[in-house]
Length: 204
Image 1 (tube, rainbow, N blue to C red):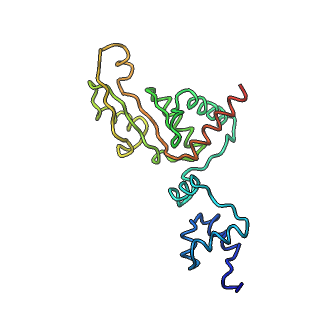
Image 2: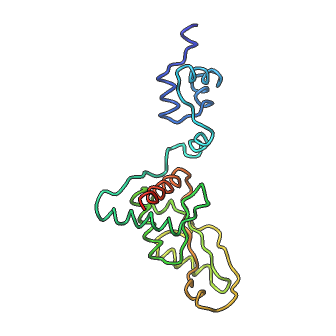
Image 3: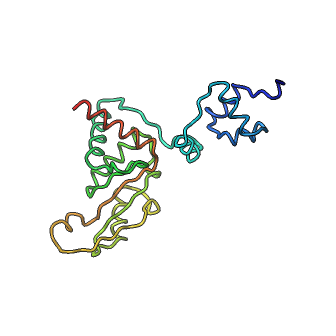
C-alpha cells in the first residue's frame, strides 16, 4: 500500500474526537471518500459515535452549551441539594430531551435558575420559558411580571397556553401570575440531572 493511501491515526483522532467533525466532513478535508475514512477508523480501532451521539455533536458544533460541576462550598452544597430536590419533585420526567420544571412560586423558580447557573454554568439568557394562564388573565401582564421578577427578556418566552376559567375559586387567585415553566433543551444536561436524582434515590 502506498503511503499516500494511508490516513494518519493522529490526524483522524484530532479531527473526529477533538474537533468533533463528522466522517463526511473529514473526507472532504482529507480529499478522500467517507468509506476510506471509515476503513482507517476501524483499522486503528477508533470507536465511532453512535447515531444519537452523532446527532448531538451535529446540533452542538461548538461543544456542550453548559459545564457541569458539583458544589465547592457548604453554601453551594445546600443549593445543590435543594436544586436536585426541586427537580425530583417538580421537574418533568417524561421529557427526554430537556430540563423542564414548572411552578407558580417565583422564589422557587429563582432558586432553580440559580441552581442551573451555578452548577451547570447555564447563562440565564440561554433559558426558555413557557406560561400557562387562565382565560381571565392578561398574558401580557403575566409575562411582564415574570420578566421583571426573573430579570429575563420577553423574547425568551414561547407560546402562551391559555386555559378556560371555570370558576373564581382560591386556585385561580393562587396562580394569578400563571404557571411558569423553565426549559433548557439539551439531552446531555437532562441526562446528568436524571443521574443526580438516581444517585439521591440510592442514598435514601
